[in-house]
Length: 250
Ligand SMILES: Nc1ncnc2c1ncn2[C@@H]1O[C@H](COP(=O)(O)OP(=O)(O)OP(=O)(O)O)[C@@H](O)[C@H]1O
Image (cartoon, rainbow, N blue to C red; front, side, top):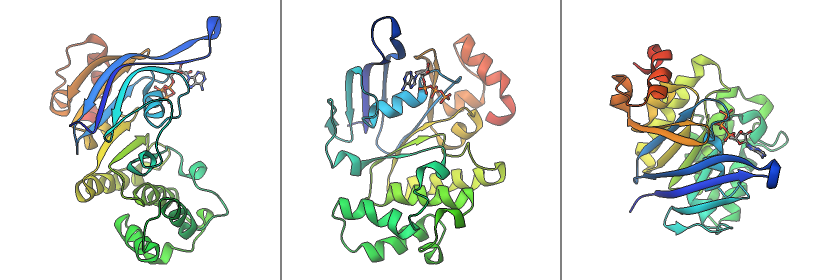
């Protein structure tokens, strides 16, 4: 069974004359352990797809089956253990007055994870920080270290799927590659499935096996990362996108 199976997804905001159709008739499947990328220009609907999966888009239609659950208007508590989101901006996604210890223990307490103490140490090792970071506050961390904490929080309850929304675009270029390598290692070591949004074809090419190119709410084309590297796109819009970022995809 696919980790993610989405059919004919429409997502819209507002009603009547105010209605904005953000995602239009999008279908895709992501296999267990696969990494699937969403790319396209700003406003094309990439983040809205992640938000719809996570239950953060109020109005949608179509069918979504994710982590073994057929999704309706609400999500089960266990869904939020199995499916975790990592956001672009670790500055905004961490509470400024909560220590790393508190950030990591809160979700585990909520989901009844046993032996939280030992687990926090292991999580900090897994994301390359180590126990010395346990009682630090976000303002005592660099941008890359904060994103490592956000990733550790996402991993805390042993999820199956990570929804990654531009996870490196707020970081210095020198740090971006470190975080991408970390995400690649974690996927392998924790048997994770990823859906990742990025503006940057190089980033997606580094981490994903397949990518969907989006424009104005629709999928223009889904292609494998090898086709992407060889610039073998069928659709003119995809070809234009690839050719304009040829240095980053090869
Ligand atoms: N809460 C909202 N209310 C109204 N319109 C919204 C809302 N969120 C998103 N939209 C609209 O939905 C469309 C898709 O937005 P979305 O953020 O998914 O695009 P994106 O491809 O992720 O863009 P970016 O790369 O800039 O984040 C845009 O036209 C956006 O203005």
